[in-house]
Image 1 (cartoon, helix red, strand yellow):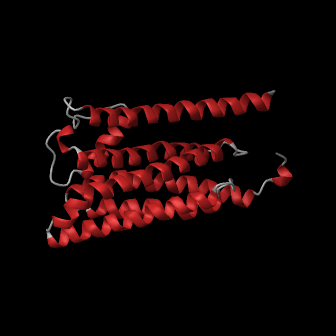
Image 2: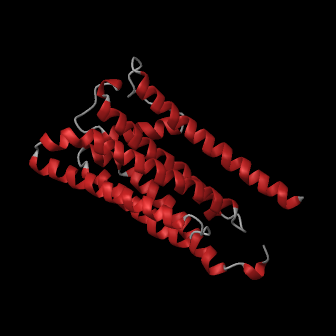
Image 3: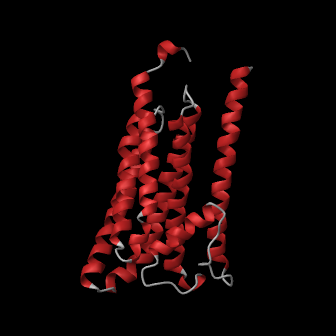
Length: 235
């Protein structure tokens, strides 16, 4: 690509978006412990994360193809996340778990499905965007790190979904296990592991294994694409 065709202004905005995405994810990870006392904090942070990647990351992306479909998935995920937040709010205020408890597993499955497809598509687009960057800067490296942490958030939703369908697959957890399961997801992502999974039930073990494999595959794929781009440029 010739320098004449580079939109330096757009590149700078995109690099700023990479940095802010990483900062936002690190901030959300730091406030996860607040979820033990204030579960609504985690639901609100999920809404903020989805809004950011939907509008700011989509706006500055250097990929045009498939943008409408990504917006559709993102809007659907945001609506379901908003419903989840409202149910969490009503549950916290009223302390009544009738309708909420009966519908939580189905809503949790729908929530994970949308998170999986939306953030999965976002990760693919992020990797493509990173390997197309004309300059490898600190911001580009931070964008790659942001994609890695994004797998941890998706893993947290996965473990929470498994919990609502099979609570016995985990060791005894508090009434609201969201914070513990989110922390455990990042433990599995970074291969540090966690003790929340009950070894007698394979479903949760498979979920933990998928999180670990996802993180390792992301790193391997990103390194392979970057090296491939480097060799192609030299040749």
